Length: 433
Image (cartoon, rainbow, N blue to C red; front, side, top):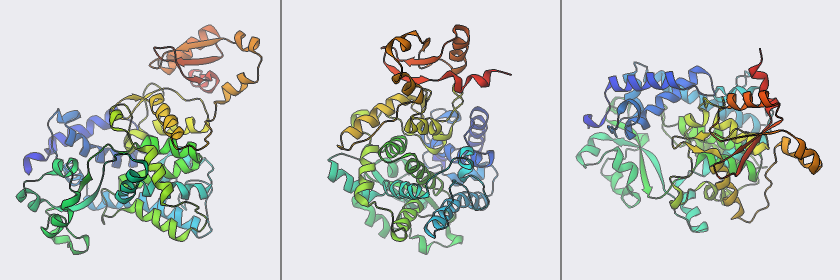
């Protein structure tokens, strides 16, 4: 198995490169924890410093050790982030809600700056956490397939005895990408899947927390889940879905491995009597986020790191861009996720999916456009519009506005389709001393 685990030198090099090249929309301490986890996927896929060499059995444990960090401390820090979200939920259920996404001491959840100032409706945050926590559940995905007649891949993480895994001729790649639903009981009886209740600290040496795919098929887009949830319900539900996704990411490396986003969802269902949602609603969201087989290379699916990564051209994360789109604010077209797909492709996909469920939904029009709709046609024709392509940097577009005294920026693709409208007044302040 050793040859399928990346060396400490490669891990250190890739971690350094990542930290140097990227900034996340959070505080450095949490950024550090997310970068560590990203190295795992990069090692599996041969990305970055791994240079197309695939180390499919590399785990976060290997990465933390290679970086000289304490596994115990790292796991504790990650669990604390989950616990802060759980505590927010408990406070709301116990009728002591907070109107901002902050801890009891006032620190923003996940270190996200706008959470300290953004006012939220705790009721909708709980609804989003419920929907987001259930949509990844294998049983919900299986049920969604039957209701909507679609194919969705699904699976779950398990404690795996790597010694037994080697003896069975398996590895992390096989477990993660082939169908194993009919072999799960055999894996348990063979000792491959280990009962968490029976694991003792002294026997953790050969135990790794790995993903086993139950059913092969396209996955879901976390971006689509957030945006669709926000349009179908409201932006606070979208924020709850985002928090559930964050828990799902963080729980992959903690002291006690369990499905915590699912636990939070069920806890809300059992204790919050005003929820007004059930499994059918979670299935609906799972369907809306499901990527069709013919679009697997066209629809972005951002990890938590990619959702929070700050785009160098626009100075904004895709998480912020999604919220702007949901709220009808001007947004900056940008390439998102590791696939580098234009965000407008995602929004078109969500629009089409929402049409297919026959529900009335309202897409908010950016305020700049609303003002134009109230104006006469003659007046609008007299406005000075600046037209740019989707890959134009924000600075270049604003320089163009200043030079030509433009009042609006229209972003068009190569075919002349309008992708979005930007009000320069929102950004020109950043160019002035």
